[in-house]
Length: 403
Image 1 (cartoon, one colour):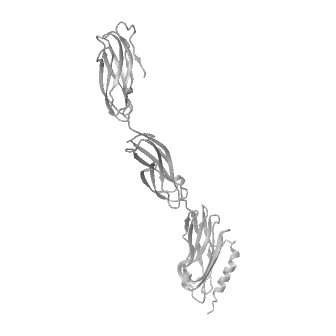
Image 2 (image 1 turned 90 degrees about the horizontal axis):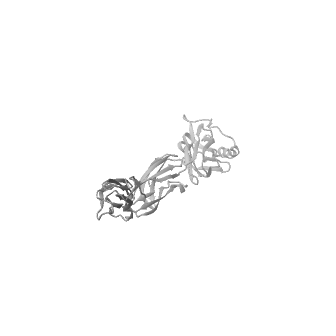
């Protein structure tokens, strides 16, 4: 048999290359042998890819009747994409042997692709893939995959009326980052809870799900999941670090976001806050001031002794405070039991009846040593002297002594 139908179509292919500078219309009018209009289209209509990777599209057809040969031109932004290859699809091969050829111009960003059946055979009807195009993504951006100057012919060498649908391409950016790490405390006693606040951001173009881990040095504190974080959105996570059992020392606090698939900017997935000083818990009570209401009195007058005590340790403590003078063997003015929270202070008032006393008296206050206390030098505080009797010669009044 004569292969009479191939010659006009291949001839058409040869003539088509100089015509690429002409923007074609999207509907080709011709003799249509079917009741429905065929469509040649880019599939998928929207394609995505990441820089440095490949992606593929199909040029497909639907609702065609008696297709014997086809041709299409495809245009794209050459600064974003490089076409790597074109493969013939399976649709026309259903009708028999085919002749397939293409030309790619990556400098200007276009291709011409042709295919025809060989021999005196009927055309193919239905839906399917005409060709598969492989692209390489060179840069970020988006562009139209412009399908134009399309031609379909039937087995009678007549044009088939059809419509075309372009595609679109955009690069996707996969990028998550830790943008902030803060701690509730920078000096911590072993056994305390430290809250670590972490802000994670999706700096890419796609919704992401990933994990965030808080660490001290390289030891994990906790991992939390971030689910479906939209592009350009951020989320705040709070981690609780129980320092029980951790040795005293300086520790670096950081947060790490897992690398998501396709992510290239990974430097900002880790953020270091700084250091936390973890100290050993201490017990420490101190007398920080002792004053008297008068410094010169006659025997029998009442003198008020004011003792200020402070809990300089890390635990609530219960202890006793004594005020005393130095004229007798057991010169205790009074004893008080005190309970103080860590960091708190209080002033205790002792009432001293000077009846039967005469001379110079040194006033002191002593706080009892609590369990585990090492710094005991400041548990005792001496005020000075109170003169009792005629040898004082000084008018009464208050005085305030410092350390």
